[in-house]
Image (tube, rainbow, N blue to C red; front, side, top):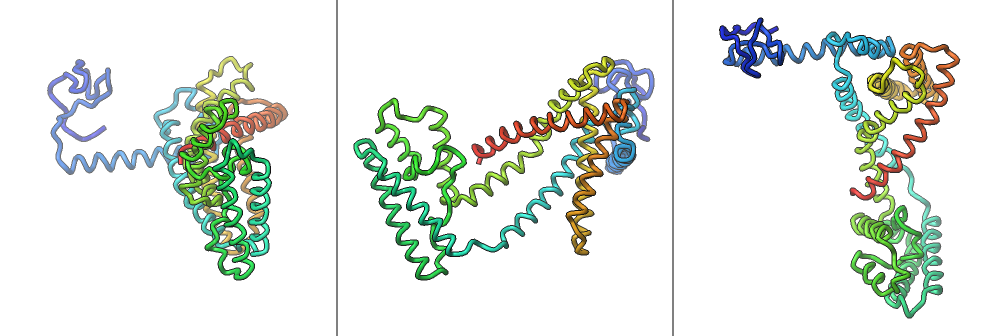
Length: 374
C-alpha cells in the first residue's frame, strides 16, 4: 500500500466502478489522488524494485533448496509470497543467456588462437578439390552445360597456380582463396554445381536444362541460399559455419521456450494416471524446473571459471556439476509427483530419451531456420 492521499470520491479512475475501500474490488487499482510529486514517483519505483528483489530471493531459495516446493505451492493457490512462474522464467532466462553468451564468445576467441593446418595438408586439400573438378568436367554433357565446363576448367587452372604458389612459398597460404571450403551443408555435393557463383548464373544454368532435369522449387530455394552464403562470406566455409552457429546460438532461447510446452506434454503422457493433475500443472512444474536448471548451470559456469584460474581439473568438476543437476531433476520429480524411487527413476529414464528426441527435432528445425535467416 502506498502513502498517497486517498481520494474522497468513491468512483474508480480506472474502471469507474464504485469503490468500497482504498482499493477497487473490480480492477484492484488504489483509489488515490492522481497528482503526485517527483519524490513520490521515485519512492514508488524504489518500493517496486525492493519488493521484486524480496520476492525473487525468497523464491530463489525455495527453487534451489526445496525442489518442486514452489510448484506445489502454486497449485495450492499460495502465490502472493512468491514470484509468478512466468516472471521468474523471463528474468532467470534473460540473466542466464546474457552471461552464457559471454562465456560462449570467450570460448570462440580461444579457438581462433589454435594452430592452423600444416601447409602439406592444405596442398592436399587443394589437390582433392582439383580432382573433383576434373572428374566433373569429364562427366558433363557439353551440349547442355557448356558454360559450366568453361568455369570448371578456369577453376582447375586457378587451383594449379595456387598449389604451385604454396609449394614455392608456404607464407602465401593466407592469400589463397581456394583454401577455404565452399558451403556444402545446403544442397548436394560440390561436384553437382561446382561453377554457379551467383544466383543469376545458377538460374541461367537451370533454364538451359530440359524441364525434366531442372531442380524443383525446394532445391532451387536451397541453392539460392547456398550461393548467397558463399557470396556473403567470400566462399569461406569456416566463416559460414561460424555465422550459422552464432545465429543458432541467439535462437537457442527461443528453442528452449518452444520446447517448454512440449516437455510438459511429455510429462502429462508419463503421468497420465494422475487425474488430479492438469496440463497447466505440468507446465508450471516445467517452468520451475527450467528456472532451477538455468541457475544451476549459471552457478557451475561461474564456479568453473574461478576453479580454472587455480588450474583445478575441470573434467572432474564438470562431472560433479552434471551429477548435481541430475540429482536436482530427480528430487524435483520425486517431490512433485510423490512416487516411489523406482517409478521415479524409470520415468526419469523414459523422459530422458523422449526429451532427447524432442530436442533433436527442435535442433534440426531451428538450425535450418538459422541457415536461411543469415
